[in-house]
Length: 166
Image (cartoon, rainbow, N blue to C red; front, side):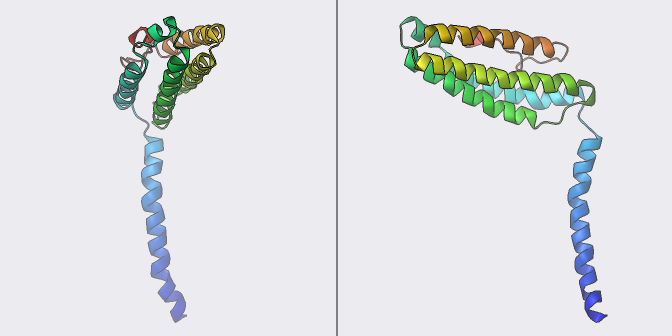
């Protein structure tokens, strides 16, 4: 009986640690952010990505016009990778309950954008200009759909404006 009493405090400690970890997680789930809090959290992620992609893609249109397709393709692939990192960060942010469905759809469309940038880049790297154009057209449609999905959310940096980059 003496040995079970020695184990009791250790068990209590384990339960205490488990509660200390579980309670904040449960509270985070129980209290999702408000829309303004979500926007405040996500906008800096979008800004960092927009700034990175602006640096990566500035002048890429001229490269394509000059026939420097492989170089331009590599830049689109880098932009795709940068967007992928941002989308992963955005997807990890808890969503406001009232906007959860539309934000989930929006994140899916952002993933399509990442894939679209990659496809443009791959086509350019293989010097497949028609394939790159087709992928760019799909990317533009996905941009428009993503923006339309979150039109009611007061984003500034999270709106996709391809003209900023090309």
